[in-house]
Image 1 (cartoon, rainbow, N blue to C red):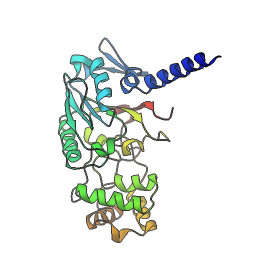
Image 2 (cartoon, helix red, strand yellow):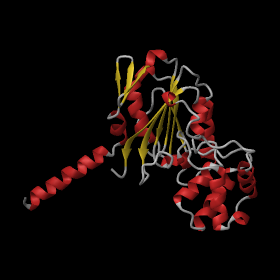
Image 3 (cartoon, rainbow, N blue to C red):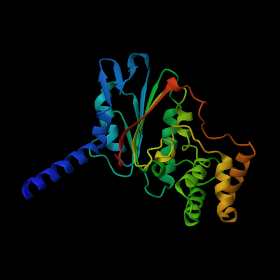
Length: 278
């Protein structure tokens, strides 16, 4: 192979890699509509059996992923919200858009989360909710538990990072001071049927690690979160409201995050449609 052929081959490989990483294509590769049946890989959903279909997309790739779902569902889509840190290239027909904050969450992230929760409160047992989640989602959509401000949450995160916490420990704490992370968003969507399509930016592709696992069970507990803080010796450095909440959780006075076995597996489907590491 001469130099010209080598360059052409390299360019072709680059184009294939870019195309493979295209968020819209990632969704379209796994989702299609056949008559009234929505196919998500091998799973089938009869849309005539669902009264409303809502889409919630959040993350840096949310706009492209949402564009794909609108293209597939068309007028069958009831509504929903797209939350990202950049404006979409094209307007949506059925979805709203919210410009949020990344990489540091702020009040925009909280307001976006509240809008999402308001939509999910309308979803009933005969409805379908489709979540489209990508990297950056945990900052773009943030809703601390009552009593903890977004400033408290960020101070806790910064304190943990400066103390050398690993990713697992960081997520264990953050999930337990959030209404969204650790399966919190799925709780708010039930009893609707739920599909989650993920664009992973996690090295492990662990479902609970992508955007802090808002729609999947959380393997960590309040006790795990407290052990992280205790091992780092940072209790006195954390906001008091964070410390009190975690202590209350340890003693069973605050509900745990979503756990395996708490949801009907027939009601949910979770699928990684693309990964930065594949």
